[in-house]
Length: 303
Ligand code: GLU
Image (cartoon, rainbow, N blue to C red):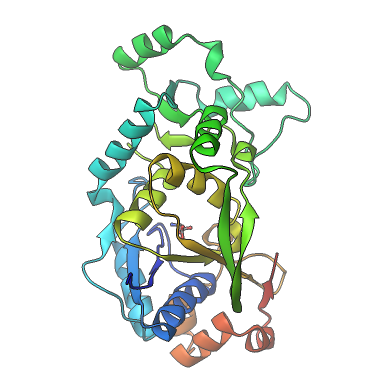
């Protein structure tokens, strides 16, 4: 029988905060409850933002919290060949194309179009249709070494995935347990996502589905802010013949001002809480329990 396998997959681009602790603790608790495995995966594909000292701090914080995980730890930056193989497969299906437009180009075009749609993360959908440039021109510019990203032709990808697997949906289990529910996927809401960046030979969506499959992850437990991205992950899993895990998107922790905790707003790190004298038990209580969370101004938001 397949052993249930859970993972916590942080990016070492800053210090962990209570929201990360919540994800890590939930994964470990669920793995423990069913005799499953608990893995740590370092999502460090972005060399400009990821740093070894943040990776070291992640291990320190998790160990301080009393967590234990299997070794060796998978570090995404050591596995670009795996993501390339997946990209080649999608390319072979005719679903990948190089795009040469910069962020500024995208902003400029979108600024001129009222009501241009955004993806679930709030970024404008890629506004340059694949058909606007011939395959020959794209290939020539790529061969000439022009910087480019590689994008998924989402309309075609979705159509092929539906043809292969039927209507797209994933199995979602509530963080409180109970039977899984089918969530209908909406990959078109994301437009033509990037599969390989200009500066990095992969991107989050591709690396995450490849690794979850290669590591035998059966349960993905992560914050509700990643729920919408599961639509993209499902399309890739179908096209790449990867077994889809079960998903749980857990409630997010909010700070006193009702903001979701995040590195970008400078939420207090676990290291800072530790320096202020918080104990691992207090962090566990605040990260996991909505009632305990209320006592220091933190609260949980369910979707
Ligand atoms: N590396 C992602 C993050 O830190 C999480 C990926 C995932 O859990 O699927 O937000």
